[in-house]
Image (cartoon, rainbow over all chains, first blue to last red; front, side):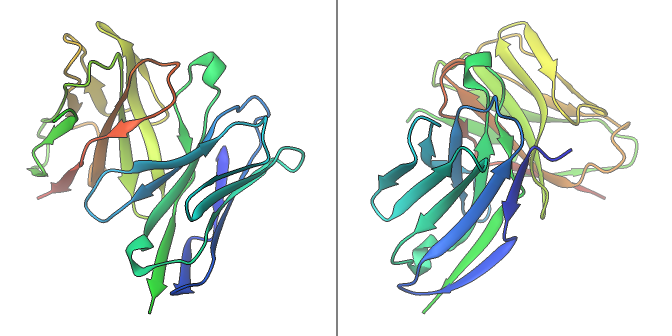
Length: 113
Length: 113
């Protein structure tokens, strides 16, 4: 049973465009939702994270939008650059229960000039 | 530099052989994790440890074993019982099981000869 469903599997965006990656979850006990960025041959690194008490969080060109009622959250990358080309993973956990992160299957983003 | 060191970067396993992947961290983190990454499958949890001398099975523990004798070290053994071991293995840690940010190593690519 996949606890966090991520889409699309791959995404091609023109330089300067907006990249949007979506995730959906079922477990309403999840209370921590991070996004990780992974370059080829490297381990993932935390990009940005959100908790359910806010609907949006922005850090530079990266924004998380969170819809608690729909049990969905998304990553928006504004002014996408070739250097943003990477695999992005959404994740979720029940932090109050000290549970490990559950990851989505990932989205491979390619930003073309 | 503080961080997580995984070794070796590449590892080859013969049929019927056990192999051990090393993971060392100097971040003074209590919690450590092993994830397996297959193309298009995301990150799946193998084992995790929240404290020295204690560990729990993740979603895909069969065919794997771990130990946590020291805070800094969390080696993963891929046993001959794991019939499909070819994958990218990622070790991660966080300060404690309640602290959200997960730090990853650079991974070990395991292949079967």
